[in-house]
Each structure stands twice: as structure tokens, then as C-alpha cells.
Image (cartoon, rainbow over the protein chains, first blue to last red):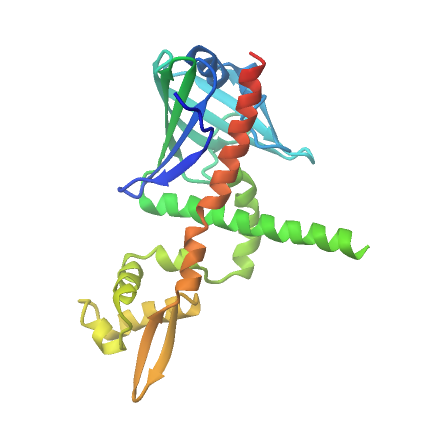
Length: 167
Length: 117
């Protein structure tokens, strides 16, 4: 199998689902561990400079992962992931939402349903993440946020350039 | 996680931006209008014929699209024609970019974790 390590993202025909695929140059046993053990998750789940900090993780059907995203300035955003079904080294489904420090849903953003599939190909693994929303409007809301984030990031970069160029 | 930062910034931005392309395409009638205008430029009358709702209602949707710059209006003789602003439509295409960045960053960190396992 040829590993491209290219991240593909598309919206499915229903308009309520985002599908992300990516190949990894590691056997499924390892990839599965990285997705399901807190000490490993904490090392990759948050995009830098943010980091993920697990409060508790019970990786089992009906179990929950409670974690905080911690920003460089100490800002904390709590998230919870409720695991629904688990098929060892094959797939798992979960419901993800934002919550307060005690795990209570805050309803700040639409809830997302996750399905993560692991496909073994010799020493490599293909990952497919399906993120589903209740409605097209919910996906649209996230899209809108994502777009604005990209826009704001660009503006932030501009600030930086202006700062360094002008001083 | 993108969403996290965005949620905060969205509140700030909402005060600044009254209309944007995503509000424009959030409505099914407005999406239909855009789909019709992809094929050809249209007058208010010819556009209204495609809908069961009143001309005023259609015109209200068109005005929102104009306000968002997705649609341009140009007089041709006595008539006004609505055109699609394809340049602005590209902004809609760009929406995937921050998502891709988030997942690419996250997965390259996962590569590192897997290398050390």
C-alpha cells in the first residue's frame, strides 16, 4: 500500500456529514492505541499551541472522555465525548459536545456524532472519520465558524506582519 | 477545536459583520436563486416565476444576496438583470481550508506519536 499521508475532507451528499480520511504508516494496533489511550491522545489531539488535558477517560461503550483544551494563555475549554459503540481495532462511535468543568453540556455549539473507522492494510492503517450533524443548518453553523476562524487567523497573521514590519 | 476559538471570535465578529456568504446560502430559497443564476442572468420577473412565494418575498431574498455581494444587479435597457458574482462564490469554497489545516496539524502530530510507540 502506498502511503500518501494526504488528509482528504469532503461533505457527503446528505449535506449533514463531513468525511475525513488519512493513511498512517503504522499498524492498526498502534493507531488504535493512539486514539483510545489518554496519555497518547493528550499528545496529538489539540492543534498546537493548544494542548489537550484529559480529566478522565473510560474507553468503553457508555463510557466518557472528559478533557480540556488549554490555550497558550491558560484559556480552558472543556469537551466531552460519550462513547456509544466500540468494535476493537475496527471502529467506534461517539457523541461529542462542549461542556463545563463538571461535564455538563453547555450547548455552545451543535453536538457532533463521530464515527471513526480503522482499516488495516499490512503495516499501514487507513482512518476514516465521519462527523455528522443533526441538520444541514448545524453543519452550516460549524462551517460558518470555521470560515470565520480562517478569516480571523488571516487577520491575526496580518497583525503580526504589521507588527514586525513596522517596528 | 477550531470551533472553540471560533465560538469566541464569532461573538465578536457578529457585531461587525451583518451579512456574509454563509448567512446568504443558509436559506433554501436563496440557494435556489443562486442555482438559477448559475445558468443565466435573470430579471426580477423571470426569477419570481420560479417561486410560489410573492415577488416581494423573492425580492427580499435577492436583496440579501446583493447585500452579501453574491449577486450583482446591472441595468440593461429598461430591465434590471441579476448576475452571479462568481468571485464571491469562491469564498464558499474556501470554507474547507481551516478544517483541512486543523486535521492536517492534528494528524501530523499523530504521526509523531505513532513513530514513538
